[in-house]
Image: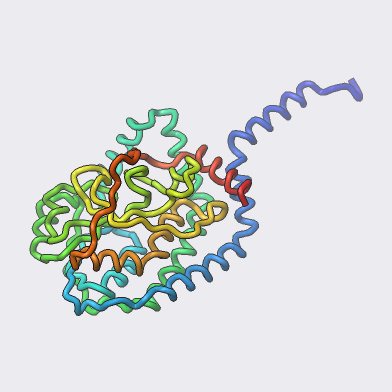
Length: 325
Protein backbone atom coordinates (compact mmCIF):
# COMPACT_ATOMS: atom_id res chain seq x y z
CA UNK A 1 0.00 0.00 0.00
CA UNK A 2 1.43 3.34 -1.06
CA UNK A 3 2.41 5.41 1.93
CA UNK A 4 1.72 2.53 4.35
CA UNK A 5 4.27 0.81 6.60
CA UNK A 6 6.58 -1.72 4.89
CA UNK A 7 6.74 -4.44 7.52
CA UNK A 8 9.25 -6.49 5.57
CA UNK A 9 11.48 -3.46 5.32
CA UNK A 10 11.04 -2.79 9.03
CA UNK A 11 12.08 -6.32 9.92
CA UNK A 12 15.08 -6.05 7.60
CA UNK A 13 16.10 -2.80 9.25
CA UNK A 14 15.89 -4.33 12.71
CA UNK A 15 17.97 -7.29 11.54
CA UNK A 16 20.65 -5.01 10.14
CA UNK A 17 20.75 -3.06 13.38
CA UNK A 18 21.14 -6.27 15.37
CA UNK A 19 24.02 -7.37 13.15
CA UNK A 20 25.63 -3.98 13.62
CA UNK A 21 25.51 -4.38 17.38
CA UNK A 22 27.07 -7.82 17.19
CA UNK A 23 29.74 -7.19 14.62
CA UNK A 24 30.15 -3.53 13.74
CA UNK A 25 30.86 -2.08 17.19
CA UNK A 26 34.51 -3.26 17.09
CA UNK A 27 34.73 -1.88 13.56
CA UNK A 28 33.46 1.45 14.82
CA UNK A 29 36.35 1.64 17.24
CA UNK A 30 38.74 0.63 14.49
CA UNK A 31 37.45 3.25 12.06
CA UNK A 32 37.56 5.92 14.75
CA UNK A 33 41.11 4.93 15.63
CA UNK A 34 42.10 4.95 11.97
CA UNK A 35 40.79 8.49 11.61
CA UNK A 36 43.13 9.69 14.36
CA UNK A 37 45.97 7.29 13.52
CA UNK A 38 48.39 9.82 12.05
CA UNK A 39 48.12 12.17 15.01
CA UNK A 40 48.34 9.35 17.55
CA UNK A 41 51.36 7.70 15.88
CA UNK A 42 53.24 11.00 15.83
CA UNK A 43 52.47 11.57 19.51
CA UNK A 44 53.51 7.99 20.28
CA UNK A 45 56.75 8.41 18.33
CA UNK A 46 57.61 11.55 20.29
CA UNK A 47 56.78 9.87 23.61
CA UNK A 48 58.99 6.92 22.70
CA UNK A 49 61.89 9.21 21.81
CA UNK A 50 61.52 11.09 25.10
CA UNK A 51 61.32 7.84 27.04
CA UNK A 52 64.49 6.31 25.63
CA UNK A 53 66.43 9.57 25.74
CA UNK A 54 65.53 9.81 29.42
CA UNK A 55 67.09 6.47 30.25
CA UNK A 56 70.39 6.69 32.06
CA UNK A 57 73.38 5.10 30.38
CA UNK A 58 73.93 3.01 33.51
CA UNK A 59 76.85 0.90 34.72
CA UNK A 60 78.80 -1.00 32.10
CA UNK A 61 79.54 -4.69 31.92
CA UNK A 62 82.83 -4.09 33.74
CA UNK A 63 80.98 -4.75 37.00
CA UNK A 64 81.37 -8.46 36.24
CA UNK A 65 77.66 -9.29 36.17
CA UNK A 66 76.84 -12.08 33.73
CA UNK A 67 73.41 -12.74 32.21
CA UNK A 68 71.66 -15.14 29.87
CA UNK A 69 68.74 -13.85 27.78
CA UNK A 70 65.94 -16.22 26.76
CA UNK A 71 63.28 -15.24 24.21
CA UNK A 72 61.07 -16.54 21.41
CA UNK A 73 62.34 -16.54 17.86
CA UNK A 74 60.96 -13.57 15.96
CA UNK A 75 60.64 -11.31 19.01
CA UNK A 76 62.25 -8.14 17.67
CA UNK A 77 61.98 -6.19 20.91
CA UNK A 78 63.99 -8.84 22.72
CA UNK A 79 66.48 -9.70 19.99
CA UNK A 80 67.25 -6.18 18.77
CA UNK A 81 66.32 -4.01 21.76
CA UNK A 82 66.39 -5.58 25.19
CA UNK A 83 69.57 -7.52 24.38
CA UNK A 84 71.39 -4.19 23.93
CA UNK A 85 69.88 -2.80 27.14
CA UNK A 86 70.94 -5.92 29.06
CA UNK A 87 74.47 -5.65 27.66
CA UNK A 88 74.70 -2.04 28.91
CA UNK A 89 75.07 -3.22 32.52
CA UNK A 90 76.05 -6.89 32.25
CA UNK A 91 77.95 -9.29 30.08
CA UNK A 92 75.40 -11.18 27.98
CA UNK A 93 77.23 -14.49 28.15
CA UNK A 94 74.58 -16.57 26.40
CA UNK A 95 71.28 -16.42 24.51
CA UNK A 96 68.57 -19.08 24.35
CA UNK A 97 66.22 -18.71 21.37
CA UNK A 98 62.99 -20.69 21.54
CA UNK A 99 61.85 -21.96 18.14
CA UNK A 100 58.41 -23.02 19.25
CA UNK A 101 56.94 -26.23 17.88
CA UNK A 102 53.38 -26.44 16.59
CA UNK A 103 52.66 -28.92 19.37
CA UNK A 104 53.42 -26.25 21.97
CA UNK A 105 50.99 -23.81 20.35
CA UNK A 106 48.34 -26.50 20.13
CA UNK A 107 48.86 -27.31 23.80
CA UNK A 108 48.27 -23.65 24.74
CA UNK A 109 45.07 -23.65 22.67
CA UNK A 110 43.84 -26.79 24.44
CA UNK A 111 44.62 -25.29 27.85
CA UNK A 112 42.71 -22.11 27.02
CA UNK A 113 39.80 -24.14 25.67
CA UNK A 114 39.63 -26.09 28.93
CA UNK A 115 39.89 -22.86 30.90
CA UNK A 116 37.05 -20.93 29.25
CA UNK A 117 34.96 -23.49 27.37
CA UNK A 118 34.02 -23.57 23.69
CA UNK A 119 31.59 -20.60 23.53
CA UNK A 120 34.03 -18.22 25.25
CA UNK A 121 36.91 -19.59 23.18
CA UNK A 122 35.27 -18.03 20.12
CA UNK A 123 35.53 -14.71 21.99
CA UNK A 124 39.28 -15.34 22.41
CA UNK A 125 39.67 -16.21 18.72
CA UNK A 126 37.68 -13.13 17.68
CA UNK A 127 40.03 -10.93 19.73
CA UNK A 128 43.04 -12.44 17.96
CA UNK A 129 41.52 -11.82 14.54
CA UNK A 130 40.43 -8.29 15.44
CA UNK A 131 43.90 -7.41 16.74
CA UNK A 132 45.61 -8.67 13.59
CA UNK A 133 43.15 -6.92 11.29
CA UNK A 134 42.89 -3.51 12.95
CA UNK A 135 45.62 -2.97 15.55
CA UNK A 136 48.79 -4.99 14.88
CA UNK A 137 50.11 -2.83 12.05
CA UNK A 138 49.88 0.34 14.14
CA UNK A 139 51.54 -1.34 17.12
CA UNK A 140 54.33 -2.55 14.89
CA UNK A 141 55.05 1.00 13.71
CA UNK A 142 55.30 2.14 17.32
CA UNK A 143 57.63 -0.78 18.03
CA UNK A 144 59.79 0.23 15.05
CA UNK A 145 60.21 3.70 16.55
CA UNK A 146 61.06 2.23 19.95
CA UNK A 147 63.72 -0.05 18.45
CA UNK A 148 65.23 2.85 16.51
CA UNK A 149 65.60 4.87 19.70
CA UNK A 150 66.99 1.89 21.64
CA UNK A 151 69.61 1.43 18.92
CA UNK A 152 70.63 5.06 19.31
CA UNK A 153 70.89 4.77 23.08
CA UNK A 154 72.48 1.35 23.42
CA UNK A 155 75.28 0.08 21.16
CA UNK A 156 75.19 -3.36 19.64
CA UNK A 157 76.62 -6.23 21.64
CA UNK A 158 80.41 -6.06 21.57
CA UNK A 159 80.57 -9.65 20.41
CA UNK A 160 77.98 -12.22 19.48
CA UNK A 161 77.35 -14.36 22.57
CA UNK A 162 77.04 -18.16 22.34
CA UNK A 163 73.48 -18.89 21.25
CA UNK A 164 71.40 -22.04 21.70
CA UNK A 165 68.34 -22.49 19.48
CA UNK A 166 65.89 -24.93 20.99
CA UNK A 167 62.35 -26.19 20.49
CA UNK A 168 62.06 -26.99 24.21
CA UNK A 169 63.26 -24.46 26.81
CA UNK A 170 62.90 -27.17 29.47
CA UNK A 171 65.28 -29.61 27.81
CA UNK A 172 68.41 -30.90 29.48
CA UNK A 173 70.40 -29.17 26.73
CA UNK A 174 69.10 -25.77 27.85
CA UNK A 175 69.90 -26.46 31.52
CA UNK A 176 73.39 -27.64 30.58
CA UNK A 177 73.95 -24.59 28.35
CA UNK A 178 73.00 -22.17 31.12
CA UNK A 179 75.22 -23.95 33.65
CA UNK A 180 78.14 -23.90 31.21
CA UNK A 181 77.72 -20.18 30.63
CA UNK A 182 77.65 -19.64 34.43
CA UNK A 183 75.47 -16.50 34.50
CA UNK A 184 74.49 -14.61 37.63
CA UNK A 185 70.90 -14.55 36.37
CA UNK A 186 68.71 -15.40 33.38
CA UNK A 187 66.17 -12.95 32.02
CA UNK A 188 63.38 -15.12 30.60
CA UNK A 189 61.10 -13.55 28.01
CA UNK A 190 59.06 -16.64 27.23
CA UNK A 191 55.53 -18.00 27.45
CA UNK A 192 56.57 -21.38 28.81
CA UNK A 193 56.68 -22.43 32.45
CA UNK A 194 60.27 -23.42 33.16
CA UNK A 195 61.38 -26.46 35.11
CA UNK A 196 63.41 -25.99 38.27
CA UNK A 197 66.49 -27.49 36.63
CA UNK A 198 66.40 -24.59 34.17
CA UNK A 199 65.32 -21.63 36.31
CA UNK A 200 67.65 -22.54 39.19
CA UNK A 201 70.73 -22.95 36.96
CA UNK A 202 71.97 -19.32 37.36
CA UNK A 203 73.53 -18.20 40.64
CA UNK A 204 70.71 -15.74 41.43
CA UNK A 205 67.93 -17.58 39.60
CA UNK A 206 65.75 -16.58 36.66
CA UNK A 207 63.74 -13.35 36.43
CA UNK A 208 60.72 -12.42 34.33
CA UNK A 209 59.21 -9.04 33.53
CA UNK A 210 55.65 -10.21 33.98
CA UNK A 211 52.95 -8.10 32.24
CA UNK A 212 50.68 -7.79 35.27
CA UNK A 213 50.77 -6.96 38.96
CA UNK A 214 51.35 -10.11 41.01
CA UNK A 215 49.77 -11.84 42.80
CA UNK A 216 46.47 -10.32 41.63
CA UNK A 217 47.18 -10.78 37.91
CA UNK A 218 49.24 -13.90 37.33
CA UNK A 219 49.64 -15.91 34.12
CA UNK A 220 48.64 -14.18 30.85
CA UNK A 221 47.88 -10.57 29.91
CA UNK A 222 47.61 -9.06 33.37
CA UNK A 223 47.44 -5.50 32.01
CA UNK A 224 44.45 -6.39 29.85
CA UNK A 225 42.54 -8.02 32.69
CA UNK A 226 43.26 -5.20 35.12
CA UNK A 227 41.72 -2.80 32.59
CA UNK A 228 38.80 -5.18 32.04
CA UNK A 229 38.18 -5.24 35.80
CA UNK A 230 38.40 -1.43 36.11
CA UNK A 231 41.41 -2.03 38.34
CA UNK A 232 43.40 0.86 36.94
CA UNK A 233 45.96 1.02 39.76
CA UNK A 234 47.06 -2.53 38.92
CA UNK A 235 47.96 -1.96 35.28
CA UNK A 236 51.68 -2.58 35.26
CA UNK A 237 54.57 -5.00 35.30
CA UNK A 238 56.10 -7.14 38.05
CA UNK A 239 59.75 -8.12 38.28
CA UNK A 240 59.48 -11.71 39.52
CA UNK A 241 62.03 -14.40 40.29
CA UNK A 242 60.67 -17.67 38.95
CA UNK A 243 59.70 -20.54 41.22
CA UNK A 244 57.67 -23.72 40.62
CA UNK A 245 54.31 -21.92 40.39
CA UNK A 246 52.66 -19.65 37.83
CA UNK A 247 54.14 -16.23 38.63
CA UNK A 248 54.15 -17.07 42.34
CA UNK A 249 57.82 -16.33 42.96
CA UNK A 250 59.29 -13.43 44.95
CA UNK A 251 58.37 -10.00 43.57
CA UNK A 252 61.17 -7.43 43.46
CA UNK A 253 59.34 -4.47 42.00
CA UNK A 254 56.23 -3.03 40.34
CA UNK A 255 56.42 -0.70 37.33
CA UNK A 256 53.86 1.31 35.39
CA UNK A 257 53.48 4.58 33.46
CA UNK A 258 50.65 7.00 32.51
CA UNK A 259 49.10 4.63 29.97
CA UNK A 260 46.37 5.68 27.56
CA UNK A 261 43.71 2.97 27.39
CA UNK A 262 41.72 5.01 24.90
CA UNK A 263 44.41 4.85 22.22
CA UNK A 264 46.94 2.21 23.28
CA UNK A 265 46.28 -1.49 22.83
CA UNK A 266 46.90 -3.94 25.66
CA UNK A 267 49.93 -5.25 23.72
CA UNK A 268 51.41 -1.78 23.45
CA UNK A 269 50.79 -1.12 27.14
CA UNK A 270 52.60 -4.37 27.99
CA UNK A 271 55.61 -3.21 25.99
CA UNK A 272 55.64 0.32 27.36
CA UNK A 273 55.51 -0.72 31.02
CA UNK A 274 58.94 -2.17 30.25
CA UNK A 275 60.33 0.54 27.97
CA UNK A 276 59.28 3.34 30.32
CA UNK A 277 61.10 1.69 33.23
CA UNK A 278 64.31 0.23 31.83
CA UNK A 279 66.55 2.30 34.09
CA UNK A 280 64.59 1.36 37.23
CA UNK A 281 64.53 -2.33 36.27
CA UNK A 282 68.27 -2.24 35.63
CA UNK A 283 68.91 -0.68 39.03
CA UNK A 284 66.76 -3.28 40.75
CA UNK A 285 68.58 -6.16 39.09
CA UNK A 286 71.90 -4.64 40.13
CA UNK A 287 70.61 -4.35 43.70
CA UNK A 288 69.59 -8.02 43.62
CA UNK A 289 73.05 -8.98 42.39
CA UNK A 290 74.68 -6.88 45.12
CA UNK A 291 72.50 -8.43 47.82
CA UNK A 292 70.78 -5.11 48.55
CA UNK A 293 67.26 -6.02 47.40
CA UNK A 294 64.61 -7.93 49.31
CA UNK A 295 61.32 -9.23 47.88
CA UNK A 296 58.15 -7.25 48.46
CA UNK A 297 55.66 -8.59 51.00
CA UNK A 298 52.55 -9.87 49.20
CA UNK A 299 51.12 -11.80 52.13
CA UNK A 300 47.33 -11.80 52.34
CA UNK A 301 46.71 -10.22 48.95
CA UNK A 302 44.25 -11.73 46.45
CA UNK A 303 45.81 -14.09 43.94
CA UNK A 304 44.37 -15.17 40.59
CA UNK A 305 45.45 -16.51 37.21
CA UNK A 306 44.10 -15.12 33.95
CA UNK A 307 44.01 -16.20 30.33
CA UNK A 308 43.81 -14.77 26.84
CA UNK A 309 41.94 -11.50 26.09
CA UNK A 310 38.28 -11.54 24.96
CA UNK A 311 36.91 -9.29 22.26
CA UNK A 312 33.80 -8.50 24.30
CA UNK A 313 36.01 -7.28 27.17
CA UNK A 314 38.17 -5.29 24.77
CA UNK A 315 35.13 -3.44 23.42
CA UNK A 316 34.09 -2.63 26.97
CA UNK A 317 37.60 -1.39 27.85
CA UNK A 318 37.61 1.00 24.89
CA UNK A 319 34.07 2.19 25.56
CA UNK A 320 34.86 2.97 29.19
CA UNK A 321 38.14 4.65 28.26
CA UNK A 322 36.25 6.96 25.92
CA UNK A 323 33.81 7.83 28.68
CA UNK A 324 36.62 8.65 31.09
CA UNK A 325 38.48 10.81 28.54
